[in-house]
Length: 158
Image (spheres, rainbow, N blue to C red):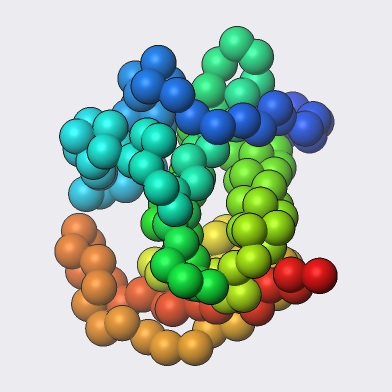
């Protein structure tokens, strides 16, 4: 038996996260990260000034999310994750593209993020959007211990 390819890509619906989305967000978080954020961390982000908290839906299911925060004219992509069953279908790209567009409209000039050294799928996605590596954070991740690449994207605010 051969593994099936992901279903053909279809654009997910992207919208602002609401507290009712917390359960699927936590499930995606736990399936995606060895050291997941707590429910309290996510709860603290809803409605917070300078925070963009997006979800991707394949109605009626929440299948991914992205979070960034702004300070002055810079932003950091704090987290982007997609449900394992919806990976490789363009969900992460759709979330990232929406986040980049929203931040550029807000006047943000630079978007930063850290990504695991070994996360090749993420590297390919970020490189396809123009992110450049600017630094390495040694042993940034705990489980397993691994370096992080620090990436930056200069945004067009015109």
